[in-house]
Length: 390
Image (cartoon, rainbow, N blue to C red):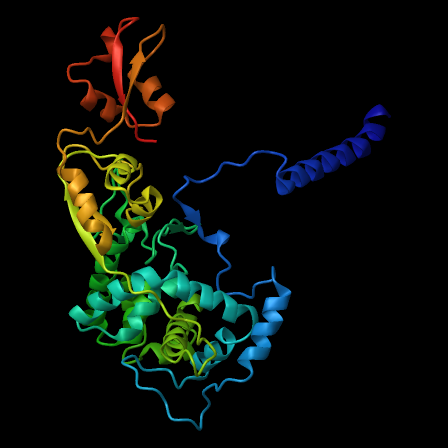
């Protein structure tokens, strides 16, 4: 009898407890594990959907966009290297991206990409590739160089770990997927490889999105078919069906800003240079000596897991052209230490592993900074040099 009466109340209690946990988690009462400061998760970006946080701006943008010409079947087509702008899906994305919240989103994306566009465009022209490729980061990462997707793709060009080789590397100190310079060269090389095999730019782009192996399989199954044929056959995954139309739409809009209502889009042209530093350096120390903005220097070198260059090797830092001379001058001052350090006095129970966890640095860095140190012979009162990397 007691068991029969108790069970319903027990179930109700469990349901209430679960609901309470959900409310606390959603409302922020329980602390959440945050990603590293220089990493931005892709869900933090309003990506390819209407912005709902500013209804007045959305309405104003919708009214403004109505004044501007949009392409239709009767109009002359723009000149493009990649075919497919005449397709209904491409035109639909032009309409979508020039209205309401999506227009606001795209304008923000293009403005955010300003510092990188000239660099990417120069690289594309050096390799004689289609100009449309400039806007792949707009649809991949919304031009955020440190964004990471839930699937683990990272950077402007959204490389997965299993697709970054042989172009990019990763270690305890760096993740080149977040290096805008290296990842741009890697992405363009990968796209060139895709095109060499597929002989078709839309297919090369689909291969960039879904993998070259997947496209090879589809072409064997559907010989003689191109990207648009495969899209009609529903052979491509949904994301890949929209991939090329999105790219062509963004290219068209950005190339015709006044005609499509984006007359305020004038990206800043930034010239980037590389400066080699032959010893390990803390970017904050370098910036202080050079009299430049430390945050900007760190953002330009977001591939560094710590604001410190890797030990034991020369490293090329990326910097705006106007900052190159003061940065090089700071590096040349060999009498000034470029890395801050702490002195830790060993107490009972200390281990190298524990010190690495406490100070947030790799164990190897402690061994490098303290030649001859051995964990098993640490003595209370000994002094251990701890490089500051946080």
